[in-house]
Amino acid sequence: MFQSDCLMQKVAVVTGGTGMLGSHYCQALAASGAKVIIADLHQEACEALAKRIHLSHPSSPEPVGLAVDLAEEDHIRAWAQRIHEIAPAGADIIVNNAAVKSPNFFEPLESYSLVDWNFVMNVNVTAMFLVVRELGPNMAAKGKGSIINISSIYGLVGPDQRIYEGSWYEELGGPINTPLIYSVSKGAVIAMTRYLATYWGHKGIRTNAITPGGVASGQNTSFTERYSAKVPLGRMAHADELIGALLFLASDASSYVNGHNLIVDGGWTAW
Image (cartoon, rainbow, N blue to C red; front, side, top):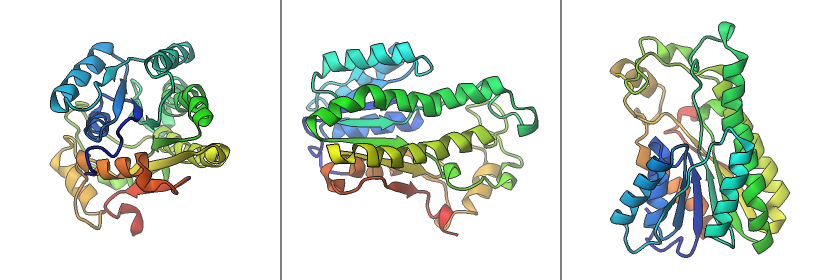
C-alpha cells in the first residue's frame, strides 16, 4: 500500500462505498490521508462504515456517510449539492464503483425482462454519467482531479459459461452467471472512461478505469476451481488486491496516466 499521506488534503467520493470492494476502497483512501465521502443507498450503513474507518484511522480526516439513490436523477443532484456544501472546492477523486443486481438479474437471455435490463443500465451506466456531470465541473474549475471508473473483465471479453456449471453463491442464495446486461454495462463504463479522458483531459482531469477479475467472496468450491483454472496465477483475487491500482490512479503517482484501463485479473485476459 502507498504511504499514509499520499492523498493528504484530497476529498474522495466513492459510490457503492459500503459494498464488498467499495468498503476496501474507502478504507484505503482514508488510510492514505483523504477525506472520504461514502455514498451508498442506505444512510445508516454509510454512517456505520464512516465510524469504523475513523476509529481505524483517527489521524485522517473524518469520513462522511452520505446516502444517495443512484437510480434517481433528483437524488443525485441533491446529493452532489450536499457534497459541495461539505467540500466547497469539490471532489478531488471520484470512484464510480456502484453497480446493481436487479430482482431477476440471473435470468437467461431468452426470458430477460426489459425492466431488469433498464434498472441495471440506469445504475451501472446512467448514474455514472450523472455523477460526473454533477461533480466533474468543479474539478475542471480547479484544473485537477482523478475520476476512476470500475469496470469488469466482462466488459472486455465474453464470459465462459462453462465455469458457472454447479456454481453457488452463498450471499445470493443460489447459482450465478454473468447476464448480458452486466457485460454491456461494464463495456459502456470503459467507453465512457475514454470519452471523459479526452473531454476533460485539457482541464487537468484524468479519467481511468480499473477492470477487476473475479474476486473471492463466498463462491462455492466448484465455481472457484473452474474460475481459477482459467487464471494464469491460478486463483481468484482477494478484495484488497485492488487497492494498489486504486491508489495509483487516485494519486499523483499516475499524473500522466489518462484514458487507461488498468486490468487487475491475474492474467485472465492474457490467454
